[in-house]
Image (cartoon, rainbow, N blue to C red; front, side):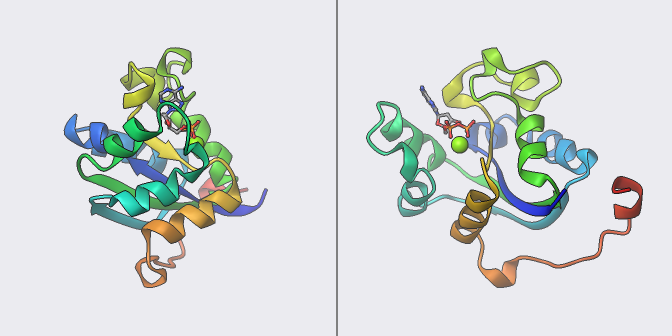
Length: 151
Ligand code: DAT
Ligand code: MG
């Protein structure tokens, strides 16, 4: 399995609901290493870049206003198969379809308030990390537990 980076964010509803620790803890415990982390407001320009693939869809305007409505916690996570593992930990886009044990399956109700974002491919992981982080904000560190997480 390849070591990858993925972009994960606790969206404004997750921050407002005091779920930052809960959500970040699930990725840490899963075995994904934090290499970037920032508490920030998303500008309209960043939101439009990030969600460009959804432009023109009926929910697009609501999505942009939701993600820019309050602070988020932006994260760059690294690990073997990080993109797929993070998506699995997050659960299906629609919380009613998300399995119990996933973040959305345990903590969310509606698609437009689904708490957390995770990149859908390694390419989008790199692209999205580039929207939210400057290169110097990403931290290389060895992760002494890797030998207990990776065979
Ligand atoms: P995901 O966040 O699981 O990658 P996505 O990329 O398809 O899902 O969509 C991005 C976000 O847009 C999603 O988290 C919630 C919102 N969204 C997607 N489809 C929607 C819909 N049909 N109605 C309302 N919001 C939607
Ligand atoms: Mg997506």
